[in-house]
Image (cartoon, rainbow, N blue to C red; front, side, top):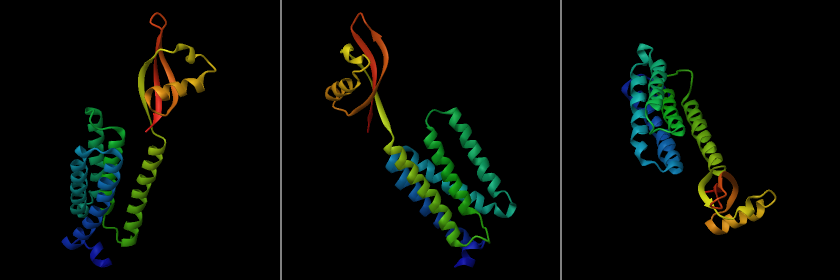
Length: 195
């Protein structure tokens, strides 16, 4: 199995592709979709991972695999500045997809199959830990107009949070005053709460 995995025959490439596809499924379908709920990029990520894998695996003999993989990332990073559809987090997933595919396409004779499994697992587990950390520390905000200006005075923070929580039905954690209109007796405030 080890010799077949490292061979540059079609079977060796397909075995490495199967490993690549398993980790792409975990990264994209399990982690990315679970935390972002964006179906529109699933097709893109899978296709990028598959194409990058085969380009790098087939060009390994030419000695261009690794450079080409990072060159493809450079092209996609340019896309980030040309479009508004990709967030920074989406670009991180593109980079991770390309990185996993380039790693799995490389035929490194001195790295056993378990080494590939460990490297891929470290990447996927890191993504999971970072997503969980982000989820626990993610806050949403709403901008609202607030009419009780007395509670905006210093020292009334607890009462203000309690009043805003009861009015909005959200567990408001902090408030930022954006603008005050003393003629109309209202203030524009941003309320922050945990999802």
